[in-house]
Length: 302
Image 1 (cartoon, helix red, strand yellow):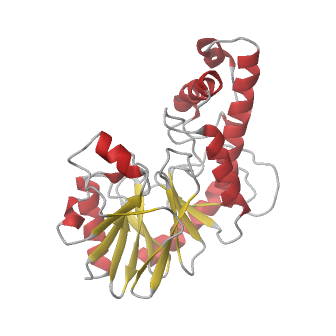
Image 2 (image 1 turned 135 degrees about the horizontal axis):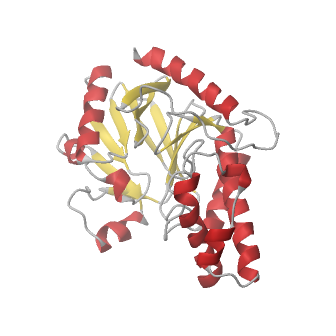
Image 3 (image 1 turned 45 degrees about the vertical axis):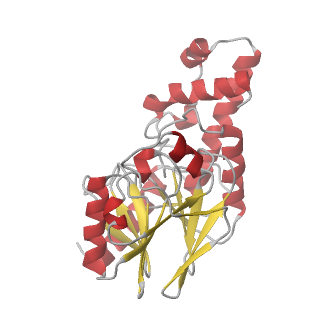
């Protein structure tokens, strides 16, 4: 299957996924969260063209984007040495141009490891400035330390294209960059939203309250129609962001109610059920972790 045909194929798959989860891809109908079927053919990483010059590379395990211009390539999260090598090979099938920039979406090792192959060809590595504290506090030889940092709001310009780097504050960690290539309706949000899935629930460095603020800010923006997450299907639509927001809102409300009733975290985990999300991919595996993280928020204030 060619890259362009893959793009069409994925568009159809996404439409099927939207139908399967009974989500209104446009409009304000209530979100009915159900599991989206896993499309066949994505066990191995594939390249999908999202817009002229904009591609996503990955499978259900991990996913990144890259931008092809006449003067070189802007790559994002290398994930691992093996993934980065596969992404580099995929880029070479599209253009002989060198990778000039690698941009980290955030600090988590499962997305930013393995970039040495790009460093060896001279790429400049960029992250949000707050990521440096994480990289320096817990050095990992598999992670190329950024050469430059940004505060958010900057653009990386190359070959007549501009990739905007946006920062919405703490959410999934404290240094997440959301990216958008000029002239496209696509946001790369990495772990902020795993389309039509609960992703990895919640982890200790997540800020659930601020995460909600970020999702609401994204929903309020009219300049995008599709998102690329760091896992899962090649892209989702606006309803995927709404689904994730609804999940966190309902989770926090349920935990707050039981916290005020005096239940401990074990009792909450046994009691709380979110019926709207029981059929969403990852619910059974992640709901306990999500409840515990929300409990710690109300217990500790973070």
